[in-house]
Image (cartoon, rainbow, N blue to C red):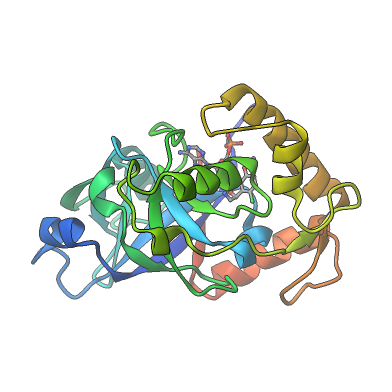
Length: 253
Ligand code: A2H
């Protein structure tokens, strides 16, 4: 990471059906608003390949009013940033409608904008940082080693992670091709580095670095409006299109 602010894309994942415990926590508090989980990503061009979304089970989230029509689930820290960046209005003011523990959000069904699988589930991830982005991570296992390894861990131990097998059943979707790793870059690098679980954080950091460079500099889009274009060209275009469509926004920190 360099100096100065990191420019993320905030992805709006509308809640289709709350998990029972999240539903109880927000009952009567959302009003007429649509609720969204919001994920911060550096790779908006991969959103076609979302298969689920991750939260940290011991992270505290809030449901924050954005305006009269919308409410966002994210950390208080992120809501503050959004209020100063003018995403949450009025500028500089935040209204928390409800508090939500990460564990309670797991099992919520949400829309994944631009994804080939239009609806996905919220799942738990050990390595979500409360101090980065929104605390919500949209999962693209084809191109993110962390997302891929976590999804594989969850599938192996659904009881331990307190999830239903169906919530983790969507397979990685090929969205970008790279010359070295083919159309499933993250799984190939995870295999090459012999990563066994999401606890292998050192190797995962290395895998993330390799996947990011390979995808960004050598990747070609396999799907979507910019199919056949380089990732470098497609990335800003997908970002702008998503923002224009109202399913994403600029988020910096
Ligand atoms: B990226 P950087 Cl396909 N805790 O989005 C842990 N990880 C978080 C996070 C948090 N609170 N908030 C965001 N992230 C993830 C897509 C993606 C990402 C792909 C490939 C690589 C990749 C789908 N997940 O990131 O530390 C988000 O995952 C590797 C660069 O600010 C976000 O982008 O550099 C990325 O980490 C931001 O990480």
